[in-house]
Image 1 (cartoon, rainbow, N blue to C red):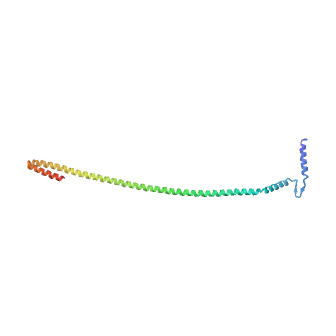
Image 2 (cartoon, rainbow, N blue to C red):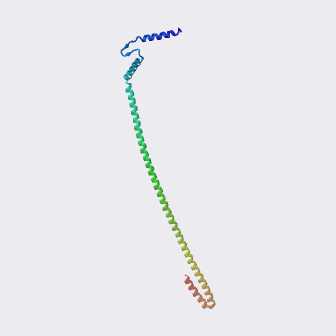
Length: 188
């Protein structure tokens, strides 16, 4: 227990020393609240002397200006993005219109080509029909000529045979030559 005695003596000396501070009017120098107030006043004095509020205010103003400029830049970017979006939408609408025009033009051209191809086919068929009719007409004419020639030859032979039987001698030969000359002349 003797070891604790010096600590107790020290505490008693501090209490005795504190008891010696005077009381100045409403301020009690022994009150810790008073000393906390004095420390606060000194701290605030140092803060004001070093112009800390101006520094803080300047820093806050700078930050507010920076935020304001960022907001302005963001607003400008938003407007630019809206303008580009409108431009892209306009281009898309124009491209869609052009695509529709191209499709319509292609359809019209396809219809024209189909009509032209059909007309060409009809013309080709008509031409071939005409050529076939001409061939048929020529074949008929050739057949009629061949039949006539065959009939004339048959008639000539028959006439020659008849005349040969009826005409003998020189008179028969003269008649045969006349008949042959007239048949030859008729065929030419």
